[in-house]
Length: 85
Image 1 (cartoon, rainbow, N blue to C red):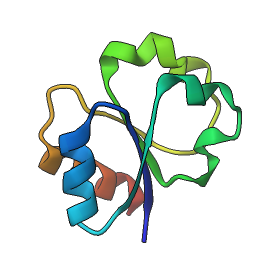
Image 2 (image 1 turned 135 degrees about the vertical axis):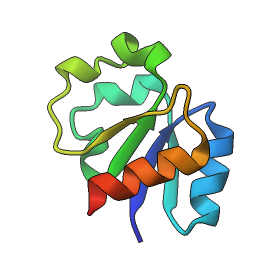
Image 3 (image 1 turned 90 degrees about the vertical axis):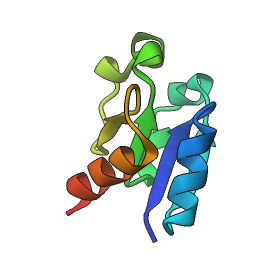
C-alpha cells in the first residue's frame, strides 16, 4: 500500500484516495520544517496557493509533489499513479 501525504484542507482528495486503497496522511505547512517529514511518503499532494509557504522549491526530497489546484480527485490519483510507475 502506498503512503500519500495530503495537505490539510483537501478532504475530498483524502477521502477519494483512501477509498482507492491508498494510506493517506494529512499534513499542514508547519510540518514541512522537519527535514525528514516527507521521507516516508510515496507522493505529496499540495495546493499551489501555499507553494511558497511550504518552501517546496527549497526542500530537497526524492518524493514527487502533485499540485492539486484545479484538479479533480480522479486527476490527482492518475498523476500519483503516473509518478509511481
